[in-house]
Image (cartoon, rainbow, N blue to C red; front, side, top):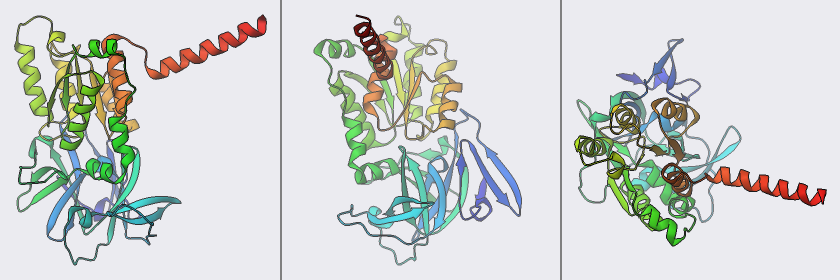
Length: 352
């Protein structure tokens, strides 16, 4: 299903409100509703030179024409500077420069995104259409060298659309993202020993983020991690475990951590299948994604997610894994208990 960008814009903007994309076509409003767990998603197609790219609509706040940019001293080489949108200063990434693409094209559009709770704009050429496609139609990027910025490809009738790994690009620009993905509270050896026996399945399509996630889980004590680059491969593995009669399923897989946006099968579809499987349905399932908005959180809850953490909060993820596996209090609960204890101690002092 294809929609021209002209018919989907209002005041030169695209607004993604949860799973609804509201469009104005010849004065009539048309809503596009994506059902939860159907393994479908929508991409905004844009181009730089003769190459077509795509970004998940869920990451797009709006599309605007190029606006004045203020240069920033000592900014990252990919960043042209800052632009103002409704009173807020937002970094602008020169996407051709980031991708090492040479073009004489007059870049006229900015795709404004919200990823990992971080607002950033990307300077691009033509913004053309929105496509609704199945994750099954998105193939992992072939290994043809350093393609780490391309997370997948979609084959159209007359062209190929490259889906970019915007999370990796932002992590390169913003060191705080990498820090949050690798920084966690140091645990005692006893806790690490308990974590070492837990079988964790991870599904994450971004090679860089998957490596960081697995490495950090290992360092925290979760040493038995089986990772996959898409939801379909993770599901194939889980099905094999489910079909085995080798004792309790928790001895084979104790907890699942999944991204939402992945080739072949997304995290919501994977969650739906797990919850429908008689042996797997009680396995804790955590969504760890840059797409955990309020609407997406409701989707995950409806499908039976045990918890949802926004990237790159790895410390919160490890804390949630401990809670779901061992029953330890969550950090927020710990803070509440400590606060209550302080108040009780103060009252006791005052009474004495």
